[in-house]
Image (cartoon, rainbow, N blue to C red; front, side, top):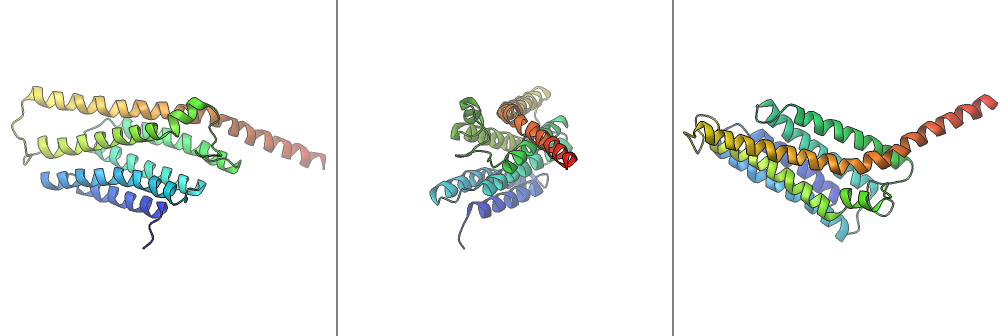
Length: 223
């Protein structure tokens, strides 16, 4: 089987669903889910590596990679919010931010631009640095990995009657909870920062669509 970036992306999503499916089924399965979570994030780096090394990068592949990212982050944050380990506003925020930026990227693709690469929609250097640079994408992936693994380890070690570390005091549990909240909202904050350039520079495509429609109406009225 010839591995392509798109196949690695599909595998990454499947492994992510498998990991979340194991959460909440006992401490050892929770630990297995943490291992699969690390695998999921590693596959995110692998598809980009294959795309660059084999020269298989394409605008459609970039969109599929973004789609995989959205599915994974919404899946994890929604699960942990449903079981009461994270705020419900966390998945709402990630969904809203992803919907807005992906909408603008879609308009940019219709105008012949891509999310990143040589023909990127981001024209400013700071926008490319925050969104498309390797350090930014790597840091964001690492923060999400730490966030998901922290929740998974908390689930395995401290929660439920069969937790691997039982009998924790209320103060210790509070410290664990504060750590989770700090880590998740730091991740959300960096997610918002990375979305600002797309929102700022992508707005011109919304204006462009409106101007094109108005010009079309004027031309039709003239006929």
